[in-house]
Length: 285
Image (cartoon, rainbow, N blue to C red):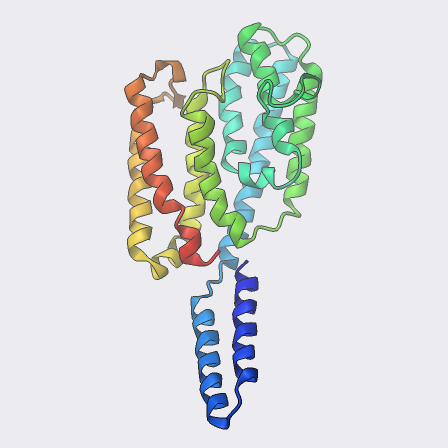
């Protein structure tokens, strides 16, 4: 979008130059055209380095996602219910951090992360299909095929990560989309309806959004230091809220949260989402 915008400005500038009648008018128009073009160039932001680093981050997360998914799948196929339950939520965090990239690569999100009724029952597979069996039936019986398919889907996602082109729009909107994910399903307790491990997803989405902010921080600081500080402060506030719900290496179940807890989390989330949504405008992405 940035390239299209710059091109449109240059085209408009050229039109101004060509439309003048007198020599003086042409000179004045040429000066105006140059000023417009220079302003456009001055406002342009090169996010190439951040885009490449985010792509590398996505690949790194996906590599670990395969390793942890394989452990989870092995536990499911061995009928080791306790181990499978322990691995379920931490494994999913690798996916939740990079969900915007996965969603851009085809049907990976419904195949890996669809909840019951999100897709036709005949097509339902992935983590939540196995989650229901583990927590509702307390069994892994009949899950071997779903477990194998899950690992296959995760490996296919990793293979396509090599080809993904992260542009500035994906980068900036990705951070906002991750917070939208939290608002729409995690803070409401709708994502993990059987395991009630929603806070793991919540934290991972916030971590993924913060990674994007950290990659854009140096550029954002140059363009709008006040906005950069505001976003940083709001991330710290939300992380402080989430810290209250840590339990060992993980987080408490969503059912342990009171209405006042979810209200406070929602308010911190909204307070962060508003300035974060302004990054795209400031960076021209």
